[in-house]
Image (cartoon, rainbow, N blue to C red; front, side, top):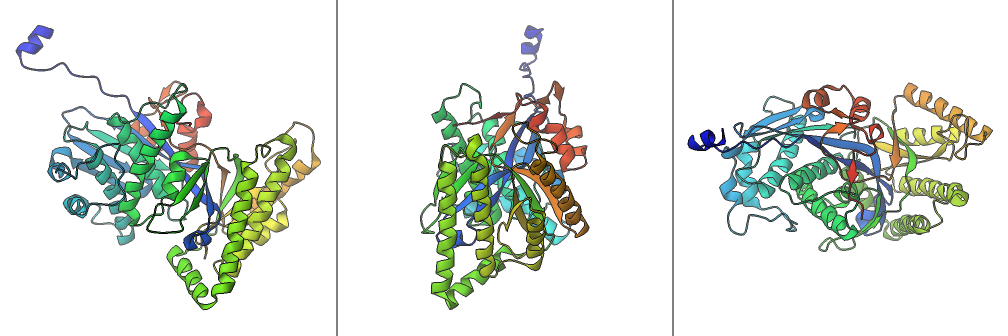
Length: 471
């Protein structure tokens, strides 16, 4: 048979690569909003709401690449040979997978434009803008990291992260895209349990660098904190004193996983407008506003000192440490309120949480609406026992109070997401098999909502299946 094949001038076919899934978390700024814009420190942490990208290789004869981003209602296919490979392959423009790209090439963007402008012509303008941004980020990375003989593939996306709420949804998607493409061009190895720490660190940096390129396409001038947290997980201390220089970033890998309520006020907001508001107030009252920003910076530094302490997660000190973080969240919110970036919906939410006694609440992101985070007290998620298994009336009372709070939030039009603060960064499920069951494209795209996505692919189904880079 082999001789007959050779005689006909055909090569033996290669088996298709198995479908695989990559995943990355969203993020929330826990301390330091607005102050970070003015050169102060901020702490951002991963949240357990994540994006998932299923990569399904097609037969070589197809020669297409398709995006099926269901939660954005984006469905588009390109013919691989028709893409502007020659422009991206010019000397000085073709990038290596290990290159650091900090700016976009205008000639490359112009070459991509005809392949982006015809996407979703009949949808609402704001949706078309989202589609063009997501497709542009993918295509810039695909053309930079791929080649004209890149294997045809369908990239199917599901996300459990609310879009446009300052929770890093675009960065999470860019990390997924970068990870998938780097895996497909074999620029990443692992992750695997025996991987050396230095190798894992190097590969996370590679993912982060290319995810940042995707963020450049979408946002123009991103800070880099969103993709850094989505790549590395856990938390990061971030500061940029000079916008002409790279920011200072310290990954906080020992940041504990903490129970969190993420609550959407359902009040539209504009981060740019809120940032401009603080800037105008600082011009009018420079000494006063600078003192407030310094106080926010002091809160961030105090939190960093507490969570860097090796005793933070010890059983004896955990409750005291969480209370320390919660109290400073409340103070941070009050300082942000004094800068004028809160909203009656945020203040109503904070009042309801304070009355319930289940935890501490502050706005997250730009304010003016949007989302707030509530750090829950120890025992607030318990039902009949405390963390050490002993009967605890306090834990029972907190659980009942949390149930009452959740009902009231629903009655007043707030949308609640239960999440965990901290946790893993970029992850890989290779092949796309959970508990012995393969996740195919149709199943992945047709599960109805965020909860169903997590039920289908979440780590809780098979903790040995998902792998993460762990320096």
